Structure formats: C-alpha cells, structure tokens
Image (cartoon, rainbow, N blue to C red; front, side, top):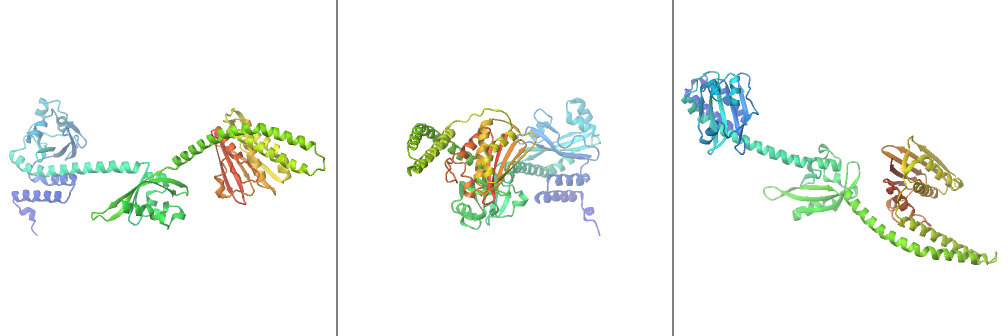
Length: 527
C-alpha cells in the first residue's frame, strides 16, 4: 500500500501538519501533547535541535519556561523564569516581531549579562529563532527554536512558523486558563477540606455526596464511611423515621435555606452533640431541587458554657440569698432549741408531751443542718494547698465512718497506685470523701461493698463505687443542682458543695450509675 504522507507535496505536508495540530487543539489536547507533536513532526520543515515555550504571567511582568525538549541535555529547562522589562524579548513581545540570532556565541560576547543565552550556549546551541505568541494582539508567551548549526535560519522558516505559533498561542492561553481554574479549584477545595466546620453536600434523597475534614473531626466518620450514606446516620435513634428526620430538608426546599438551626446529632462513637445548621438549596439548570449544601458547627461546648454561666449566675443569687437567710435564721433557731430543751427538762418523764418536744427538737436540728449547709454553699471556697497523700486522706475518712458501715455489714476496699499525691486542701477534700462515702452507705441499707480506687496519670483520679440501689438515669444530671435530692431527709446541698470544692481545686467530678447495680463517682484533680 502506498504511504499517503510520502506522496504529499511539501506544501501539502505542511497543510496536513497544521490541520493535525488544529484538530488536536480543537479536541482539547493539552499544551504538552501539542508541544510534543510539534517537536516530533516539525523536523521536515524547520531545522532545530531544541524547542522551548515560555508563558507570560498574568501581569505580563515575567516569562516562565513551561516546556522544553532537546536532542541533548537540557540546561535551560522548565521552571526557569526571567523579567520581561529591560530584556531583549521586551520589544519582540511589544511589537510582535520575530528574532533570528544566527551566531549565539557572538551575541553572548556582546551581551555577557544574558543568563538565558549563556545557558543555551552551554547546551551546544549556535543559532536561534524566537517568535512571540500573541492572542488578540496580546503577548501570552514566546516560542524558541534552537540549532547546533550557525546561520541556519532563513525567511521561509519564519514564514512557516508564523502559522505554528498561532496554534501554540492558543494552546498556551488555554493552558494558562486551565492552570488558573485548577489553582482556584484547589484553593476552594483547600478551604472546604480544611475548614473546621462540617461542610456537607447531600442529594435530594438525603444521601451524603461530599464530606470534608471538618465533618470528620466533628462526627468521626471518614469520607469513605460517610459518602453514600443517608444523613440519618447522624441522627439520634429516636428521631430516625420521624418528621424530625426530614424537617430541615423540607424547610430548605420550601424556603431555599435554613440558617443557624440548632439540633442534636450523633457522632460515630455514640456521643450526642449540639450542632448549628445552615443549609442552602441546590438546583439543576431547570430549577429543580437536586440537594442542598450544609454547614454544621459543633456548639456543644458553647451551649454547655452558656448553661454553666446561667447556672453560675443563678447560684450566685442563691448564695447571696442563702447567706442572708441563714444569718437571719441561725440565731432564732439557737434560741428556739434552747427554749424547747428547757421546757423538756421541766416535764415529767412519763409526760406524753415529751415525745412531741423531742420531734420538735429533731426538726430544729434538721433545720440547723440545712442552715449550716446553706452557709457553706454560699461561702466562697479558697483552698489552702499543701502536699497531700490521698491514700491517708481517704482511709482516715472511712475509718471515721466505720461504725455506720459495720452496722450495715458494708465491706470497704482501697486500691491506690504509687505516687498518689496532690496539692490540695486536706480539710476540703475530707469533706468530699465524707459526703461521697455517706451517700454510698445510705444507698446500701442491706449491706454491700464500697471500692475506693486511686489512679495516677496526667493527674489523679479517685473512683468511689458502691453496690447500692443506684440512681435513676433521669436524676443523674440533676444531682449537682442545689436542693435536688433523692433522699427523704436530704437537703440537696451536699453534692453541689462537693462539686464546688472539686472545681476550686481545678478538678472535675462526674457520676455513673445504673439502677439496682450501684453508683460510681469519679473525681479528677491535677497533681
């Protein structure tokens, strides 16, 4: 079979090459593909040993080599850049002129400061042909042809290459646009992926389509785990399949957006967190809803701080009121108690009224206890820190309560790791252990076990666990509130005072309990 290319005239071959280059560019070929085609196919029409392309930056201040190929070692290659102003290329770009240098060595001797010429001479090049790349008269770059032979470039080469560089200018400009689009895309992706907020896109069926790093940090699911799943994986079990599951979707589709909506969501490890949701409707070209873009912020800590602030402010008011009331009540109580005791002493032993007087005295004592605890609660706590051995502190308090525990057949175990020392107020911590042990003993009227375990880590953790009745789950969070009590004769101030003491030591306290199986209190104090 006859080779069609071999039968073409030189003019026909040139036309065929130009058509192939045009077709590649129209089909979206990259700058690299277009450049490689020119380098491989242009030898039949133009002599060269090296070709390079440089792109002008957006401001037109610098040229950057973006492609370079040679039949030998490339010294002046990709990444090399130079300033346009004041260079020999400036008038070429400004006027659109072609430049031919048929003796590069001679040119370098006349312009020894030309770094690019020096480097290309090092590659063995002796002549060059430089053509500006223009788009609508605006310079977008430069194309360089170089040869190892001197005096080789002629006017017919310049004429033919004018057509080539027109196509290359299109490829360079397209490359610039693609690079700019890629940079902007990467910039936006970087913002989205590294945002500390959860940025999530879901489709019309509530399936997750995109999942950024902020979403992973907040909810714990990786992108691989979350994408394709229903948003119900983030919802509380009791909300799944209910109107709450689709409420945000329906409001966004109705109004086009929802802003700063607060709701509770579930993390991968089962934690319930409060999130603030803002969501915007996404539509296709025909205006049909196709999903929504959602930003979620974890405001759990903020809500906790707000609640703590309200609680603190409320406690401050309660404290001031308690201090005033306690002082007003304390002295009359002492007088009432004394007077009743005098009356009781004057009654015969068989007088039936003595039982009533005894009950009154008991109630007065109870009221006096409440007043004293009110004063303790209202009084600011300022610990007097000193080195304290927790094992001794805990053991001494239990020893004091031993008569009560022995009467109820309660067994006590103390486990302490070495180094369990803290800087703390010994009297205040004794008050903490006393209250927690007293609660444990009262929770086991038929006997049981109390375990005090001390662990040493970043700080010291004390665990006090009993095998008593436990606390109702709904009451666990309320036990720290003033005046809340599960006891028939409690004041509801013991645990709030304990919490206040622990926090005054820069520590924290929490409770875990299961009805009929017992309760554990945990106290963490820094060393």
